[in-house]
Length: 346
Picture 1 (cartoon, rainbow, N blue to C red):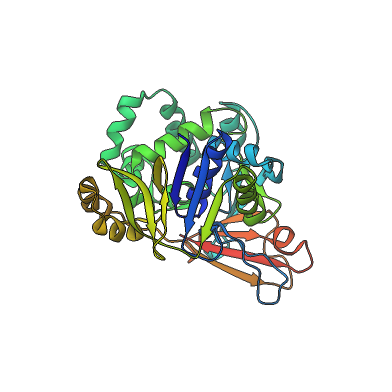
Picture 2 (spheres, rainbow, N blue to C red; picture 1 turned 120 degrees about the vertical axis):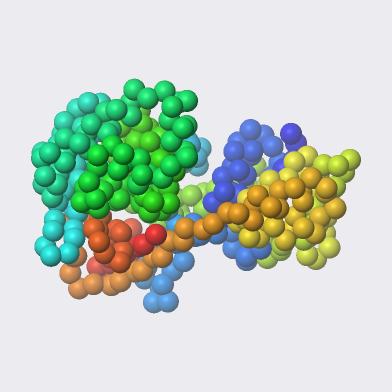
C-alpha cells in the first residue's frame, strides 16, 4: 500500500492516518471543516481563557490501542492514572466511594469490597460474584449474551434494581455510552473481563493533564505532515473514483480527483449514506441499508465556571441525576487560574 485517501479528519480519520504514515504509507485526508479534529478538537472559550474538550474525557487502562496511538505520537506521558477513591453522589444526601487501585485480580476486587459504602454488604457480595463469574466464561458462551441487554443479563444474575441503579448503571454508561437496557450484555461482559482481568492497571481510569487537542489532534496532524502526508480541509468528497469495480480515490466538491491505492471512510453514517447513493460503485448500494440502521448515543457537555470546588476528587459519578459525571477541569482547562467544573451526560 503506497497511498491512502481518508475521508474525514476527525479522531478516526487521523488515527488511521497516523497508523498508515507510521508504516511508511502516504496519506491524504479530506476534511469538510476548516480545521481537522472533529469532536476531539479543543476550542477556546470566547474569553480566551479555557480550552473546552468536546470529546473523550476519560481513558481506561484497558484501552490498549489508544495507548499505542499516544505512544506513537509521544504524548502518552500526559495520561495520568486516577488512583484512590472516586466520589459517588446522589439525591437525598446519598454518597459513596468507588475504589481505584492498581492491583491484580483478585486483589482489585478485595480492595473494592469495603469501600462501596453506599451499597449494602449482601449486594456487594453479589456484585463481586458477577465479576468473578465472568473470568471463567469462554468466548463462545460470552457471544450468546449478544442477544440480550446488559440490564436483562444483570437481572438474571440476581442484581437488584437498587444495586443496578447505584453501581452497574454507572459502569455501563461510562464504558459504553448508553443505558443498560440499550447495551449488549456481550459487550459489557467483555469490558468487565478486560478491565478486571487484563492486569493491574487495566481497571484504572486515566485523565489527561492537557487538552485533547494537544494530546491527540495537533500531534497527529504534525505526525502525518512530517511524513509527507496532506490534509485537505474545507472540502467534501462527493463521489468515489471507481477503477475496475474498486474504489481508488475520491472526487472533491471543487472537481479535483484524489487517487489512492485504498479509500478509508471515517465519517459518521449519516454523512456516508448520501456519498454511497451517488457513487457508480455497485457494491456500495448494498451497504446503504445496513448503515442506515445505525443509531446515535449523543454526549451533552456543559462547562461551568464556579467560585469554589464542587467535588474533592478529579471526577464524580452521579446517581439519578440529569447528568452522569462531574469533572474538575481546572488544571486542564486553564492551568488552575479559575475554578472550572464540567458536567456531561450521555
